[in-house]
Image 1 (tube, chains in turn brown, orange):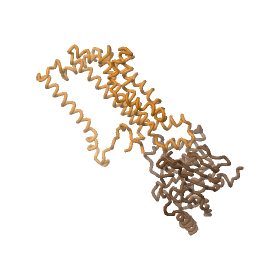
Image 2: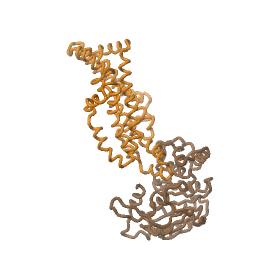
Image 3: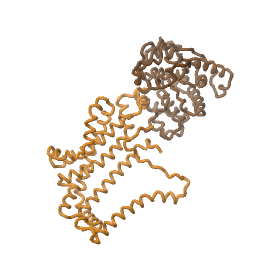
Image 4: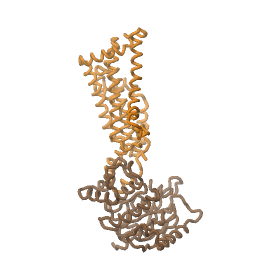
Amino acid sequence: MNDPRRKLVVDDLRIGHWSRRSGTFALACDGLTFDVAENAFVAIVGPSGCGKTTFLTALAGLIPVESGRLELNGEQISGPSRDRSLVFQQASLFPWRNVVANIEFGLKAQGRLDAEGRARVAELVELVGLSGKEDKYPRELSGGMSQRVNLARALATDPDLLLLDEPFSALDAQTRELMQEELTRVWQADSAGSGKTAVFVTHDVPEAVFLADRVIVLSSGPAHLVEVVEVNLPRPRGPEVKRSPEFQEISDYILSLVMSQNKPGRRTEDHDSNAALSR
Amino acid sequence: MTATQLSPGRVRKTPAGAAAPGRRRAFDRYLNPVLGAVGVAVVLASWQICASTGVVDPKFSSSPSGAFGALVDSFKSGDVWSPLGSTLSIVAWGMVISIVAAIPLGLLIGRNRVLYALTDPLISIMYSVPYVVFLPMLIFWFGIGADARVVIVVWSALFPLLINVIAGARNLEQSHLQVSRVFCASRLMTLRSVAFPATLPYILAGVRQAVGRALIGAIVAELFMGSAGLGYVVQLKTSNFQTDDAMAAIAVIAVIAVLLNHGVAYLEQRLTFWSRTD
């Protein structure tokens, strides 16, 4: 049952939500099928509005599954759980908590903020490059710093599955590049088991290729699987990887897959997937 | 990022030119208090001149010097302490009861759609109708003792506070609630560690309004049904044509009002510094 190559199983998955505006049922995913192996870093790309974020929200347990299998370690996901944590698109930090207290939130919520928990938080502060900023409040942090806290908060509970919802999309180009490198570094270096299983949603194809072991390309909404592309670039990956011909080749291929999904007349807004989040 | 507050906390802006010489900055800093003091002095001086020259009759209008003399006398004789204590204690009791009741109640109502729909019209009515009209009824129900005065203070202070807490609890950020859900926080934890701090700016804005209304409630209660308190002193002395003593009591009330307001403003600065936008 616990086949490490099938840590996360998505089988004929259907997710949708009632749209408040039109009062109709909008499908976000229909017949979505793929697996994620243990310790793999998987990126999900697809055209805007295809339901990537909705899928991730369901994976986090925030919205219910209509039908199909969505199993982690052989158990159907039916709500939020301690074995998953989410790095939010917007940092969503609590402005009344300082950096350390924000990172501690998950541990505190789960009653695990003991000496060990505090030590882990201190270690994460160091790891994500927030040393010296422990006592700062969110309003004093830049966008990149906020996302570091967001990432550390998600890692603090030592989740079995780490979910990342376009965490760098709101950052400027330079900060984004930097954060991508930081994320690979953190992901490889985290002491609580290097290379956690991670699912990273993005619309930025080079970002997906740079970060992931496999890139899952989704169709335009309602999303189903188009192709799973293996990224056989060696790790650890530095910024120079982005200039290699292999990187270019894989990126171009995936980009062509995504672009071919942008048929005229399909939804192109991201509104619906965002509406699902704020429900 | 922060939602709009009913009455946002004071935003303190540092003067624009940070490189400006220290003398300039000191000048800016003391300019407003100095001008404020000048304004008060001008009004008091014209009052004094009118009273001294007989433009107005100091028997009716009192005078700054007479009121000041009465104030000093009341402190010397100790006559001021008993009414002052009486007024402060019913304001304090009224505020404690209002705060203890309004915060949990407001969080509960704000986070529960049915409760909100049920209570919203009631609370709006109670908040909008001038509470003074209930005074005869309250005297009828509770008599004219100290308990009845506390009831009036609560009656006047509770609703502005409650309305603010409810508004705050209803304006929680969805993203904060999602963080709470993703990390499996219990309902109690969410209420205490997310809803409560997020509502704190609203709570303190409500407390500021409530303190002002509590003081008014206390004074009105004392004017109408008192046998003690500063309001009663004002009423009694005015009836006896001792306007200097009445004015002295009013001055004490003014000082209390200003101190209470500043106290809450200070609390706002200390407790909700994170919501400031400067």
